[in-house]
Image 1 (cartoon, one colour):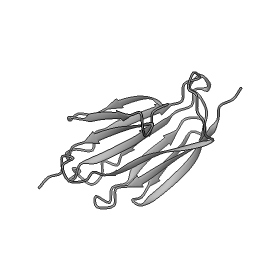
Image 2: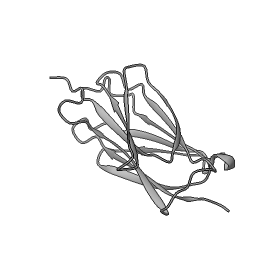
Image 3: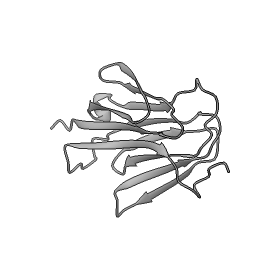
Length: 139
């Protein structure tokens, strides 16, 4: 049984106005998402060698504000970053939240859907956005 569904990547870096890069393996397509924009892609399973590779654009220097990355809890992922990162999971919200402090935009997220994942809905989303006060912002 094929478990393909739609995944929307949303760029909510409104204050930072940073572009987000998204590479979709199954279509071999690369996308640049401007701030306050999104893209929806069909996502297959890891078994089908499908994944999303998401990162912040590096062309504008350092990130001056902390950001958060909100992913579904069913996702398998590899997350790399050169700086300190806080990861939180909420069973209530079925989400995993990464808090990335200001600094070089060196984080990278590779997200996959495992064949064992039980997904109850035909679509989901990933949100990259500005973090609020107390989330590591520069003052």
